[in-house]
Length: 254
Ligand SMILES: Nc1ncnc2c1ncn2[C@@H]1O[C@H](COP(=O)(O)OP(=O)(O)O)[C@@H](O)[C@H]1O
Ligand SMILES: [Mg+2]
Image: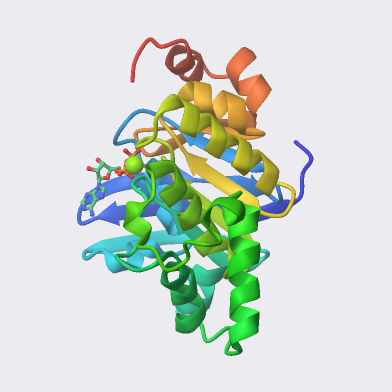
């Protein structure tokens, strides 16, 4: 497959204590596309995603072996600036994790942590751009002081995406971002992700195969911590190379 690489892992192993959760994973995530990671529950999807911004570092008794390159830099070296890494590799979770703060302050939060903008007008402009980007500006522009938790779940998830975008990331990791949403909201979020792929490299974990097929350009199938197959989404879903992939996508297990 010919594509520009954004993230690449070499022989990646991850242990939780004695348990080997990722087994010799070699994956090459493309630049400015959507990559879906599919597989049954417990197979290591979230673990793999969290490797890409070293969120697993927060877990105790963890050991990581191998290499993870982002734009050619191995992020597993001890000198990696984790705060900067997590800004460039943003993350969106299953449940919208909006803070118990106003919409304005939810968006202001990361800018403050990263000391990005000081001038009030610049901050307001960044907040407007962020909300505009996720299709919320029109509906929320007069309600910026409202508590973000009063928004619908779909709006909250959009706000979480805006909160990532405002920090100017290159990569956006999404861990089952629609699993708390109804089907209509799910389709709307998928539409937003499709629009974002021209500017960002997105990696979405999902156990919803229809979603992976609808939204992604490339798909990796993970099973028991191993990357069984990686390819064009169309190829994976219509003509998988591995029997295991075929069994999974045709619903024989998982
Ligand atoms: N913090 C942890 N400590 C110990 N084991 C964990 C931890 N997080 C996940 N695991 C185990 O690692 C495996 C992969 O988990 P996970 O990455 O969450 O899978 P998925 O996202 O595909 O459901 C599972 O067996 C899970 O129980
Ligand atoms: Mg998971």
